[in-house]
Image (tube, rainbow, N blue to C red; front, side):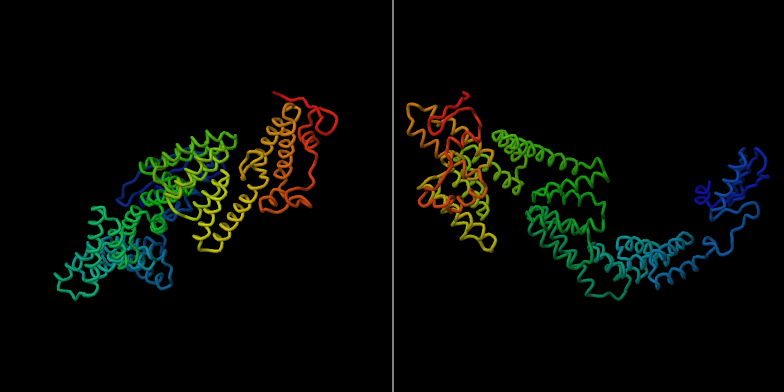
Length: 541
């Protein structure tokens, strides 16, 4: 009842009997301003009747049981002039929200008074709510179309908001009214309008660089023009300047948090930058405002299809199904089409997968494709790693040297230098005993891969399985055990990779090692007896 009465400016009367009776009634008479009334009788218990009257007594426009007149000094009894005066005071005290409330109430009383709208414009302008300010000022001009002050003020505001064609029209009207016109302001408005026109023509013609240039020039005349900023953002997106798009759309969303097109364009920019999670966030935010927004729904679905294939690739890697992983990643790349950052990162993963599969030609081919996309230090390092895994040591040294020469900062130089030293060490070791080659694994092999290679090699070359070639088998068996002893130990492997002596008194590659048969038995604990080469084991075929 209270909410209804507030909206219709009606009065509330109630008549209550004593509350001691078991049942009672409340007579509610609703009397409109036009002296018409409706009577409603409610049969309630005393308790509920008491609750109803307490609720009614809280309303500003209710008088219970005594009078239908408003209390003196209530807000609705104030005149428009009084409210304007209170608005001025609130403005001086910088209580802008309160000033807005006073002026809006004055407008409600005197909607045809242009001065009320102009004063509300001044508050919104002070609050930097320029769109609201323009609406207020336009309403004032509708009521006083020939008011020079209003039109001069609006012409400047229109330029500030980037609506320069409308500003030019206001200046034309001012000249028709024989008003004194600020020539500099008029020239600025015309220049801004011309630049926007040139930008629109360039955009329509597909010259997006030129379009962005003119929109930027027009923005120099404005204070905050979200529509013009959006035009520039759409142009720079076409030029591939996605960071500028992120910046421009961010400023739009700061003042217009429900600007769906800005959400969509910003999400597209983040997608092109390979920042898929941030892009998802923008699409989801837009879809909260409009679940059926076609652009954001389509973009979200497109991005989901890429990430779905990418995740399947990652899951396959965890299962050591590298061929499957490569297949999923290639599918994701085919969907991504021109999302260059994602394609680069995914191609790097494909290179590593091929290297782990010992398909070195394919790995090097993919790495060279990266360099064709962009000759960067990072891509040369990827190629060098692929060449190193392929045991193309001299080629790897040359590639890392090139990466080092390209480096411009200390961090890149340090990384390239480390890779270069590693390749040189591998080149040196290739002429001696190469533990990685002995086990048949890459230099980036995991401990699990090293352990698997050792088991297979040890079982293959165990002397008991090679009775017709005992001498060669014994040598290979010992080398395999030695390689595993070094590479399965993190500290020893790091020394070996740096080209340092792993064992004390190693000299030219010698040193003391564990008996290979004992080492084999410790790692696999398969039955047997005796010592030396005469041990016997049970092998699984």
